[in-house]
Length: 231
Length: 187
Image (tube, rainbow over all chains, first blue to last red; front, side):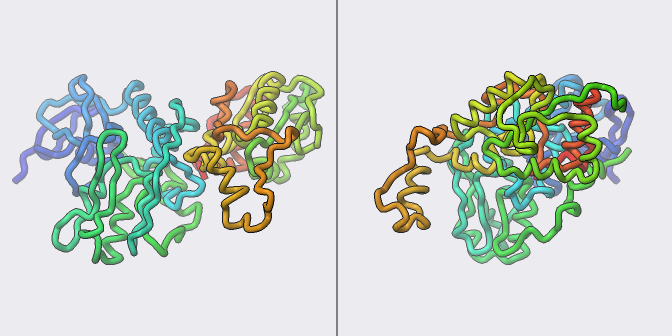
């Protein structure tokens, strides 16, 4: 039988299974901690920092933190909310995010977080980097303009032999996430769809398919991201 | 709202935009009858007043700055309007015209006038237009807030008629704008 730990979440005492990820434990307790690079079922990375919370007063990413006995967690101070808004603004300024022409618009987690934090323009200067769109793969398009380098695709998408079909090249601000031509050669439509779905933005798209949900019925058209989590 | 209160004066312009945001304002349907009770339009494509004839309370800017004429108009709006509102994706971050920002201007002009597939034999003298009467193209497309101080931003492509209406009513009546989730969208 799993053992439970007692911890404090925004002033409330909560229980969670020992070793539970803080993001998931908070969700169970009805508290939404926003995430971007985190995806249920794949190893957490702590890359995007948007899930930063205060653990015993110290900023820590909630996706890489395991709940422990007597832990005191604050998820939503004015400073944390301002910090999260800045993370969204940086990502919008750093890439080329042209929502009106993006197939993922309405289903995009980055855009949904911008709605949640009421981002209008980025506080940071738009960089307009020159990035490529790769369309050589028979089933997938990789649009580097929209990629936020969260690496969810690298961690979560593997072919039948268990090899990752995405890999990153270069380092630092030059980092690019590429489709591996060898390991992705024989992927089926189902895996291609999963690759598209695991991408939080519109950087991985399926060929020959899209715009199949009308405006007004897309994931984040009616209610903000996180509103499915209720206390 | 009292009909006796002096009407707020509104100016609008489309810089590097497609007039979609202006169309979206017209999409307020019958509320346009309320609008003309609340505001008077000055320089605007709606009434075809080409130059400012008085100081304005509210300036609505559609589109970013892609040439020196856009910069001139935007600077003039800043001088003549108490409150400046950037309306729509292009005014906020450059939008579709800003797709050229990743390329050097020379390459863009050569593609448009010399080497592009649609040029064909249409430009036998190989001229890139440079008449002094034509506005000078800027090195890249600039969001409005990178050129002048902008007071408020309305996102959307175009912003919904409801969002524009709510923003105008808030500005005219001096209320804080709290847009509904459904009207606050980027597409």
